[in-house]
Length: 341
View 1: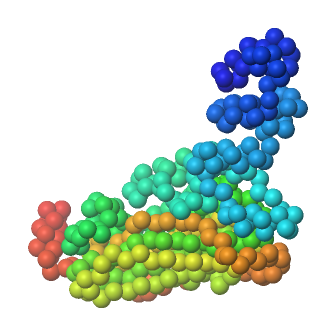
View 2: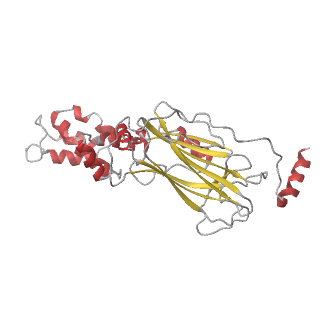
View 3: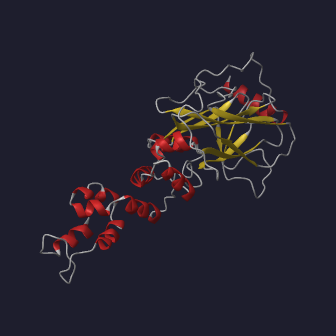
């Protein structure tokens, strides 16, 4: 704001003028505004007609690039223009700047912590992400895994019952305009690293599910099968002593119905031997991004018929089983039990 005040106070003529008493050209104001704080610019277009014309789409496009906010790919912009749709760069900048996200970048979840408490606080302070975690244990470093160069610094580990971590991202509050989701349907791409312990078998599921604006976070249990029109799920299972290295899984979902505004990423896992403790699958390094194909398609709003969201997954927990204590922990288990009695 100081730059703007100084610029105005240095002129005696009602019309902004430069040091040679010449009217200050638009490009000079353009450069000044590029370096002003966003809060100072919100109402600047209402000051005068000159400012209104300066703070146009091209200005906000330049401001996005200046602040490191990626734009939709050029072929997407041109394809949309042929269908009389234009990217609102002010909309993109507003939400990307407000929520410190980059919706067309490499990872919408770049700042989301792995630690459960920190992640819950992070999501609670935002209006674009909802976080839920049950039955997961934070490990730093990962336990029960032979240290290797590719091993992550931290992860979430699961136990003998299904544990899950669920992230629901409101794409429109990240800066993605609703018409882009309705007519272009960008691919939802999720990447995540996972690995079992070396001494216990485990099962792992990764799911993408789309939600409407008024739909909240669904219940999660072991059965993650989503509506075929709303999502996709990947399942991996490993036997004991598999010595499985840390693996990056990539899940891609496309061709969803119109009206979808939120992308839900669910990681769900457990061990296969029903051992007491955190012997289930480990996962970390979750990434979420949008991708556009080279051969774009302009969807009709009714081209893909929607199906009800999977609000009530089937309970696959089955009959209760007795816990099995790993041999190497049996002595500690009895000692802890005796101490508590």
